[in-house]
Image (cartoon, rainbow, N blue to C red; front, side):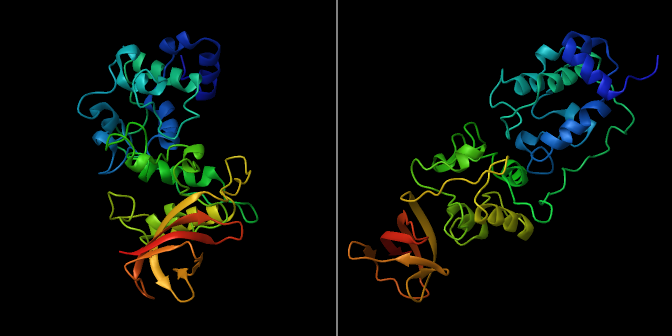
Length: 303
């Protein structure tokens, strides 16, 4: 019997997932899903728990223990993570997580004995290339989400490598990145006023990601800055609302005319200024985002 095309397999699995066990599923069939949803994190020396999913050998090796058990999908940690039976659920970029059909394909591969397919078992598959929007199209969350997933989410998630997320900052979803509960880290329309950008640029310390260098490339930083400057649009292209009145905390170099690295500041009679900062000093600013596109400073201190 000839090999069943992947599209046909997916249709069969959607109609009856149990048929996955009878299909000739190989690593060739799950590799595209790994490339698009998994290897952005699970590759290279920084792969979480050492689990590299860029090759069949890496997947079979697992991390501290195997993550797949031939013939037994239910006992395979990979399936448990994809379904959310073990936490954190994978991929970290979810929701959306993998569809039931995609998970059934992995179950069929495991149930069928982890067949190798056409590629050498040590052949590596690189993460998908960074995608910019087409000319005339805005940058959306879909364009920047892979950067957060590959470089930030390993720590900034509820079950990150450092335990709970540092300073409670979650970067594993669009809503979490724009959260304003304690203070706003992303100011739609102003990357210069966004703590997140100032961290990845190194204007605020410590520079992020914390496991750098290497830090983000100039192209990655520019893409995130463009996303914010264009309104921090969601995956469907809708811009985020302005966080007027939200708290901000920024660091940088104090400039002439009350600026922070060219970002205009509002200093009023109620502003508390500590340690007599002067032009050229590195300072920390705490305040609120004003309706006129400036930071209304409540406290400034030289660091």
